[in-house]
Length: 371
Image 1 (tube, helix red, strand yellow):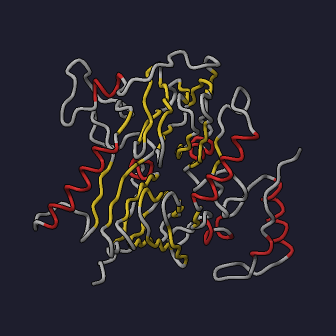
Image 2: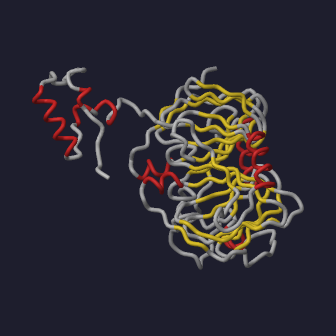
Image 3: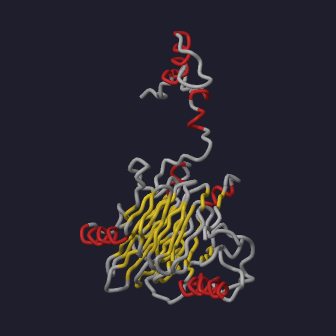
C-alpha cells in the first residue's frame, strides 16, 4: 500500500501569506505529496494555534447508567483469558470512537461478580482503582493482597503482576484509571500474562505494602532511594476524609490551609519523592462546602473528575451539568472549569499533569473567585 499525505492545493492563495495558485505551484505541491512532505506555510494555523485546541470534548457520564450496563455485562460476559477484565471504558465523543476519556487518560467501570477472579497479568501502563462503594474485593499486586473499600485509592504501578478476587456474596464495581492512550500513542506498551488464577486468596485487612509504608511522615530505613511510583498500595478513605475535614475546620477557625474559601483538597503523593503517585498520573481529592464555588481554572493537560458524594454543578467551557454520586466529567486541555456545590460535595480527580510538568509544558490560569 502506497503512503499518501493530504492534498495541500486548497490552501494555495486562500489566506494571508499564501502564494497565488499557478500551474508551477500545483506541480510543486504534487511533488511534496509524492515525497510525503507537507509545507509548514499551509498548516501553521493547525500546528501552532494561539492556544490549545484539543480534539477531546467536555463530556459527562452518569454513574447510574454506567452501573446498569456493567450489571448487565456481569450477566452476559465472562471474565477470563482473552477478555481479561470486565471493564467498560469511557469513550470521549471527540476522539473518533477510541476508548479514551481524554487523549492521554483511560477511565472505565470494572465489575466483578461474587466469588469471581480476574486473571493475573501485567503491563507497562500505570493503573489505579478508586472505589465509589462496596467492599469484598482484593486486588493482588505482585502477590500482595490489598483490600478494596469505599473511598479507597489503590495503585497498580506499571509492570506489576496483578489480579482481583471477589470474596463477597455480592458484586462490586469501581473506577479504573490508566495512562493507556499515552502509552499507545508513544508506542511503548508491553503486556504479559501471569497465572490464570490469583495464587494468594487471603483477605488481610492491611496489605504488606501498607504495613511497611502507610505510616504518616515515617519511612522504613531499610528502603532507601526514590521509587518511580509510590510504594503505598492503598490510600485509605479514613485518612483522606480526615485530612479534608481538618482543612475546612482550620479555615473555620481562621487559619490558612484551604485552596480557596470553602474548598479543601489533598494530593495523593509518593512518600519516596514527595511527588505524584505515578509518573504519568496525578490524583487528588476535593471537598467543597455547600454553596461554595471554585474559581474558574484552565490548565494544559486533561483531567477526569468523579463525584464521590454529594451533588452540584460542573461547568466546562460552554457546557454545564448537574452531577451527583458517581458521575464522571472529562475536562479537555485548557478548557475553563468551574464547580459549584449544591450540597457538601466530595470529588475525586485524576489528570495527566505530571507529563506536562516533566516536559515544562504545563501552564495554569486561575480567575479570581467572584463573591
